[in-house]
Length: 86
Image (cartoon, rainbow, N blue to C red; front, side, top):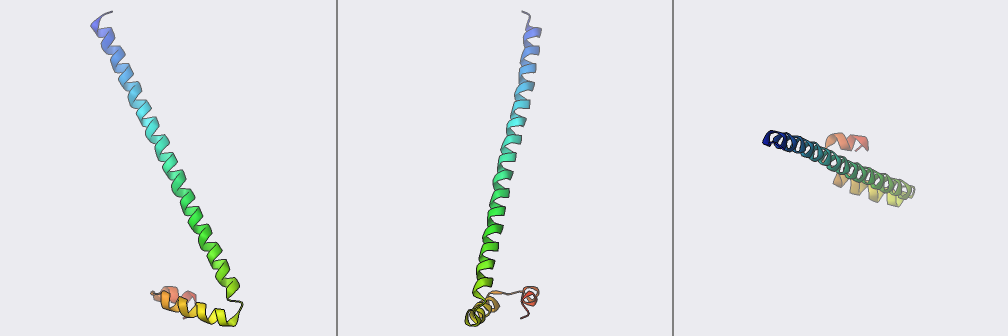
């Protein structure tokens, strides 16, 4: 086997290695995105469930007054306050 043939084989294998590394990076990126998407979905679900609980509790007038007072204290921005007619 000549040196030139060996160099060609090395170059071919190096190119293949580059391709495999790129594939690995793509797989890692997809997995990270999948995890991130699931975390965002879980966070949204928690917020919906907590909001549902608060709405259920607000059916009682005493609880409603307390919750709205807490919310009024919590909200800092006028645009948020407007959502709740504060």
